[in-house]
Structures are given as structure tokens and as C-alpha cells.
Image (cartoon, rainbow, N blue to C red; front, side, top):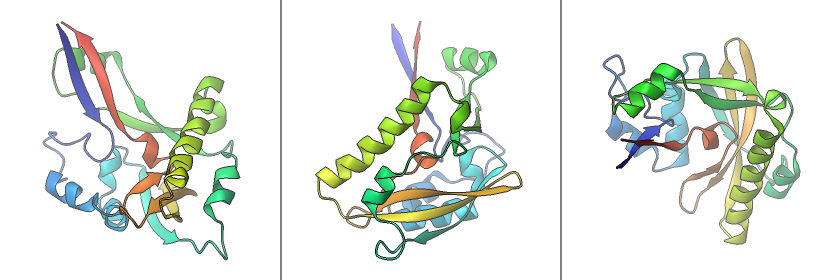
Length: 185
């Protein structure tokens, strides 16, 4: 018999932990529009399951004065860009396989330190998600997200849509996704 466990890394990984104060309904409301999501993330940094990662602020860019989507698509991923990855311990895998709640941890790694195959995956993800929106002629815009990780500040560019009010791509947020972990009984 095959059992599938869902581990939600974006916004919900700490739900069920008695120490958390995050409310599922608040998160669901915040995810209805990219602006409300960013506001929620700024005011509730614990959603990222890393006490050192904080979204500081965001700014919608003017494509005539700043950068347009095609310019962003051609922009290479900086070798110093940080990438989120879930740290999975043997203990966590055992709990998941036993059907128990397992608290995980998100850490950030330099893009240049990732294996080449993973680097290609991140590049392909960026191209696919943005190109898909462009192909579907979705009106997409760029938002500059300012982050703090420990004492370092950095920024990422997030692609959003005002048509469906969703975030389409960000190198940090797009990689804090829902993972499926399969286990055999």
C-alpha cells in the first residue's frame, strides 16, 4: 500500500506545531492577492520556517523606468543569489514514514554552491513559469522584494499578475512549494 504525505513548505510547515500562532484562514485570505500575501509575510515572518529569513518590503517596478519582464527573463541568476532548500534529517524522514508530523527547517544556499543539475533546474523553472504566462498573454509585472537573512540584505524579483492576483515566480517563494513525499507501508 502506498501512502502519500504532503509537506507544505510555503506558509504552512509550522501549522500543527503548538508553538506557532499562524492561522490557516489568515494565510488563505492573504494568498488571494499577491499584495496581501507580501503584507502578511512582512508581518508574519515565521511563515518561512526559518527565523533568520524575513521579507522586509516590496515595490512594484515601473517597466518603463526600471526593468521589463523580457529583460528579467534574460537576466541570469546571480551566482550569489540564495536559494531555499528544505533540510531533511533522517529523524524527519522516519517521522514522515511513520505518518507523524515532522517539523522541518528551511535554509538558504548560494546558487553557485548548488550542484550543476540543480542550477539547471532553477534556471529552467524561471524560464518555464515566466514564458508560460507570456504565452498565455497574462498581464504580468515585476515586483522587487527586499529580504533580510541574518544580517545580510538582498533582493529578488517577483513576477506577479494583476489579472488573477497571483504570484507567478520568485526564486525564493517559487521554491518554497508543496512537496509530496511518498512512503511504502
